[in-house]
Length: 230
Image (cartoon, rainbow, N blue to C red; front, side, top):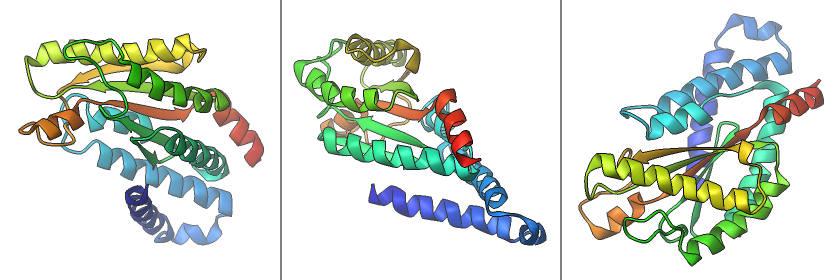
């Protein structure tokens, strides 16, 4: 998570510059400043994640994680997300966990969630790693979980789009069968969009075959955080 810590610092410095450069800052309280900085941060985060991407990919993740509540409530949510991110990081070997805005981006590559070639059925290794997520997701019931499935560029793009959608749905269905409320989930297949490595090598293609989660506060968590901040 070191990479994100540096990135978040840059975002907050940018947001702080936007706000503290205003004469009006002198006449605001701490909560009002937090709201303004939170809004600016959200704009920066959403813009960075949505840069130079066609359909889906980072644009989709940016749309989910780019929004920011801000203020004291945003800080309360952020603290809960910090804790959840650490627990996921400790629970699942091979997981890449990033705190973005007031949410969490979780990436499970083939070493964590593997499918048989051209199939959407979870392997036993994939099931074992998803089992490690279950207690963490149950500990934080007031979060929404959006699952994105990705493939490498081998084969027809339309076929890969369908396959990635089926794989994302398989992950969702497995977690629901383990007792996590279905209402918390949405899924989307992204196909070959937004590769994180080259598709010219076997290693790169393996990295691109992945599942990503965007974990965000649901309405109940937001309302609880707002009450706590008042």
